[in-house]
Image (tube, rainbow, N blue to C red; front, top):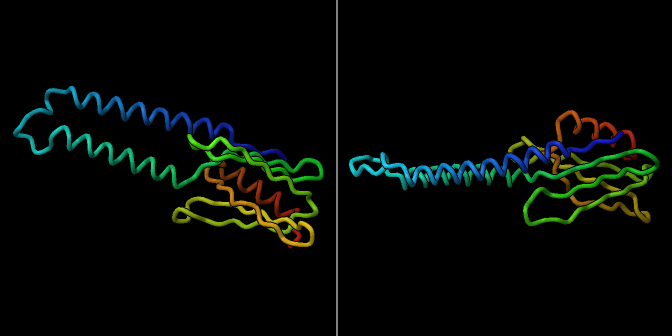
Length: 159
């Protein structure tokens, strides 16, 4: 089985870009609109700019807390391969986990962000010890693909 969320990652990058452009254009339009310069008005254009900036920051903070990752999962052959990297501007490191199917001990699914998102942690039997891999956020993976990954891992987990 092969699963990846490349289309979702493109959608996330595009929505971030569009949101930034729209935010910038709204601020520029508000600055140059003359009808917001009325001194009798209770709300000045600067109050409106601050409100819009606050909404923009809250939306970006929520997206940051989701910690979306590009995830590619494959269980073809005798190995389970999971490639992933975070979708942030400042991280370009790509990671890969390759576990022989007979060495997968278990996996854990943890919920985060008020139970709306999931993270997965893989455990491998390595030199007679259980090795824990870094946790991977599945927030950018479709629900159906998440279930397929969990079902596939469930077939190979020994514990």
